[in-house]
Amino acid sequence: MKASAAELERLLRDPNFGFALFYGPDHGLVRERADALAARIAEDASDPFRTVALSGAALKRDPARLGDEAAALSFTGGRRVVRVENADDDVARLLEPLIAEADSRPPEAAAFVVVEARELRPRSELRRLFEGAKTAAAVGCYADDPTTLEPMIAEILARDGLTASTDAMEYLVQNLGSGRQVSRREIEKLGLFMGAPGTVDLKDAEACVGDSAAISMDELAHAVSAGDHAGLEASLVRAHLAGSDAVRILRAVSAHFLRLHRAVGLAEKGRSPEQAMKALRPPVFFKFAARFRTAMGRWQRERLARALVELAEAELACKTTGAPADLLCSRALMRIAHAA
Image (cartoon, rainbow, N blue to C red; front, side, top):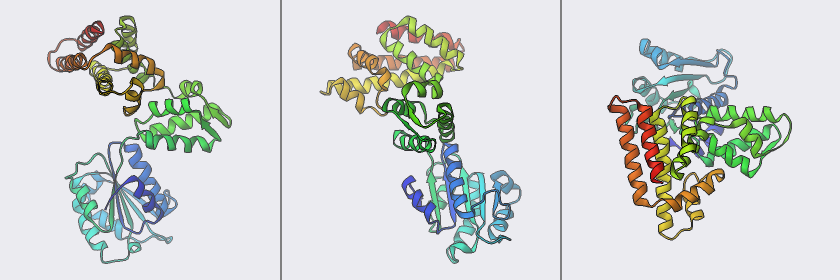
């Protein structure tokens, strides 16, 4: 079956099948979910009699090992877990006969096979095998959004007796989400920073979990749309010092102008600036709300469209002309800021 994140919770409680595939761009979330399922089956992931890990590369060298490990019994009792890491479509051909055989035996008769993979296209052999089998489940693991980040943040903070204020929670949701493991480590670090139960306020969150590169990029984009040349120059320096290249900077500004274009379009259809900003996903961070609202009054959709074209042309020039990319980027941003 193709399982959603909600269905995954049920599967973890009652894993009455034999094969699970976790795949997607968020490898930290892939690993976290695979660990949770393996722990549910084998209790102790470090027990060598209950758990074995194989890589996709190792199985290419020794294809028969997967079947041998899946059929082996535990010396200490209980069901074994066979983990396959960095799998690709070549592994699908090894798993196919095992999954076909699983239909004719009780789920507990063989090891539970947990497969981890990177992003897989819908037509991937591995995905199609797991999604079409009765005894297997495939679960996509994608970057967190506000609906999944907020409960995760609250859960981790609660372990240390902490709660987050509304402003702090909004800040954390806006500045986390690049990867599940990274987000978890950042929230755990915040718990250590607080040192005692209580409430995390905005100042605490900014002091501990600030994604300085992301904040610098937001400042830069808002400086461009506001026509703030001094702010733009300072933000460009910070972005370069943080390791951001010209293409990344141009894309960040393009994303900001796309949001502006969307919000201005909603305002032209009769919504208030506040309603338009709340309709964006994610909504405009409160810290930048006043600046975003001002920019909405400064730009019209046609001029925003022209700015987006100029940003796209600048990115193309950075990739193809051989001219200094930083200068091409700065020139394009200064022209757009001047137009503001």
